[in-house]
Length: 386
Length: 142
Image 1 (cartoon, helix red, strand yellow):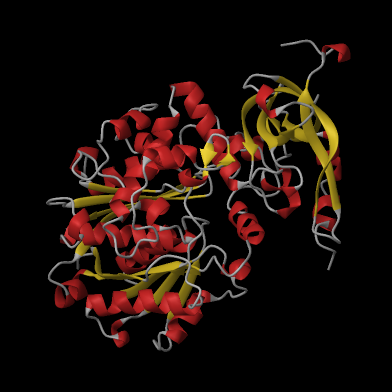
Image 2 (cartoon, helix red, strand yellow):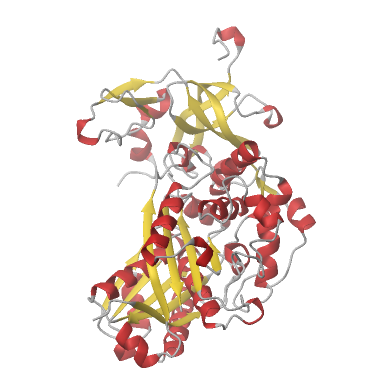
């Protein structure tokens, strides 16, 4: 029997500050859209896995696996929750991939969720900073933007990356999100506005940073037999790789490259038997604009130090050779931490099915997503194909 | 159960008051904070306590302008990665200098300061920050 793994259903809730809905509501909405999209019955699903970073701190609720199965009325089943900071969503996708590939599960519901707006700004900032080495970075005053500010300053010094280039991921991603009805910010922003926005941690500004977002995303992942039964357009997970690096940014030899991204991308392409030039559409983790610049280099779209130049040349725009973050990315789609890695797969699946409307990349056949945790201590790469 | 932060900070006093880490006798690598296992030698490693000199240079830095409540009174403040002369890096605030004057490569030395409070009734954390090396101290420019 084949051990291919397919995505046959995708769904998400509208990302944003969702004052009227709680964690349970948004998760349920995304999961139900995914199930309806797939056509499977609730009784076909034999497991649920949910990616979440910190519901315990953001909302006071843990044990989300059982909660999701319960609220969805799915009954008695294996319900898992996984955490890998901002890569929790990607980790959930990978857990389902491995479970289906091994034959242990046949049809799994994958969820990613985060409800961030129920706490005040201080609590939100503190919670985000535990994604890095809190006792050695956060406790000494290094906020999460500060750590990415460290990277940005070194990148500017080592490679001459400019402030204009630093603003470009934001401009591009907002332009893309203008065509994404699920995105938090569906409007373009001019580069002057980005460059004049308030400083968070020099040289990073508010509009270089992904927002605080409530949101959830879901997938139905299954084996080949079930995929063919329910779907005319299954999207195959052609490879899945995960790598780690030091938890603290200061323990890395270089802070202008993410080694875990380099190795997980390389291994992922090898496993799928593809070259980078075979990939038609990318979702790269842009929690800060410098992150997209570094990842553009680390996955191999641009040479080291030339990520900013690639943006300038429009290579990563829709219509360019390597379109990046057609969904709007974390910056404009929004970054509900645990949901992000799942939402990236939702976007790739829509692109490969040809259902991405005005942001469609013509004839997209292969897509690659990079979801990172913390400042690059976890990197999870998935390659999808139709 | 301890008050917030008390045990968490108390057990690290030696390390964060004095910049004390460790060193692997096998590969001669220095670690701060002290590591439980030498990642290069693993079971062949032999870790011994090491008192850092507290001298180094700024590897990268930022000026924090939005911070959680614990640090709000200090904004804007400079936080940096300091490369210690022994070869390892740590993250710390840079004090006794105008943010505009901070540069990559600037020589700095450790000083003892109040870091933060764990909320209104929580423990006060003391530890290392860094300040520009002053010639009067006799610390040579590298």
